[in-house]
Image 1 (tube, helix red, strand yellow):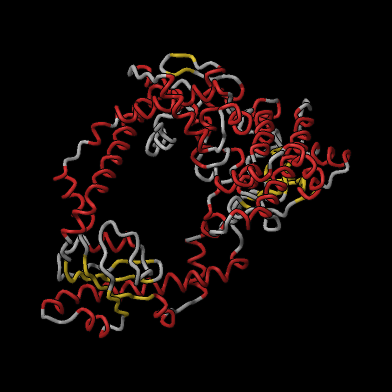
Image 2: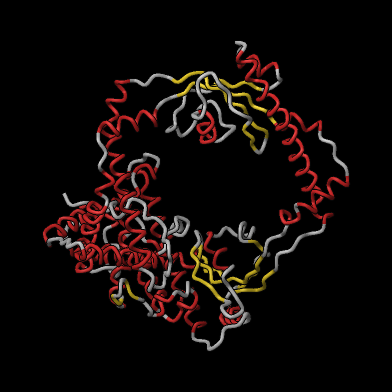
Length: 549
């Protein structure tokens, strides 16, 4: 496994710092303009050091390097942003006078080594760190990581100052349960009452023309480096690099966890792990060849739409073209990651080539074929959609009218002692007795026709014995009735308080730290390529790396 990681990492650094970075994000940092933080110039070396630390921290948290994780972009991971955040926080830790001893940093490094199953730091470096980090990089990472943890604790201290009495009140507020019922008004019950005319459909199309707009589309040429083409060579490379397969199988099994293998023991999944390793080596070889093509294209003085097809023809590579696709759906004939679609929509006539894009079964290099502008189609081509929308809107309107009339009549019926369930059924609506829920409930187990947050918002505005106004939904609506507030269990509350108070203090620390950090970043990062007035929140601050024992 480590051999695979090392190989892929080498390629990723070549791509990041090579001329082919023209196919990447095009940010200022990769071009050498690193800006300054609070007046201190960010050197290239400082940027690279922080980048290594950010990548390693991602690996420790996720078990995979960010350039190998298809979920990295989906989880909003931005390495440049994280680098500048880390540089700013490291600077602030120094301003606070936070110092970490070599012995303390060594404890964290040893914990990382043990978790990786390495018998020594030298083996850890050979298996895991190179070429991302050296032992010196690991020592710097450990010192900075512990310093940032201490910075969070220092800055976030005001947010932890909750007394047990305050925690008790907050616990009661979050966990007070309500017994409620509701009347559900289904729009589908009013479909038969909808009257449709050609003029009405015409008017709806005119009023909602933008909702029928066909989005901008793109069509790309692509070369796919299939991993099956590298299967025999990948086996040869893997057998040459891995000398102790049982140890690697065990390391992969421990890293992924038994849940990944559905509880099967290691002895029953070694073949699966072996195949996964084989596939990763083949994928790396495919990526290496894709990067080679991108290097060649990057040497051209000017890139045009014809360069990728011409290169494919000259090399005897199969060039294919997608059907037009939009930014939401992607090419229907290909099973490609989201990055394929994202990259396709960044291509222009001046920057017409992108990649490498890693998929499950190969690596893509793509080139712009043509861009298609967005347009509003004629009524005839979307008439069925317009008709369906008309029925949906009208049935919802009729359901809302009926629901609002019912809600207005409830007060008198409940005041006269009538039962909510009988009033609901007499009005022709469905009655639901809800399982008890609180403000902290994530779901209501016996009702899923409305978001739990909507029901909580309605319920906790009402005193017992009262009903809500009509609450509209996209498929009807509801009226909620609060029967009673249920008493809290003192025994359960006492048992839950230690953990609740700890979580409360941790959340308070995070909020206090993030509030402070936003103010620091507002001024400190103005002269960096980020140039953001209000950066996103760092969830929880730098706390998730293993702590020294």
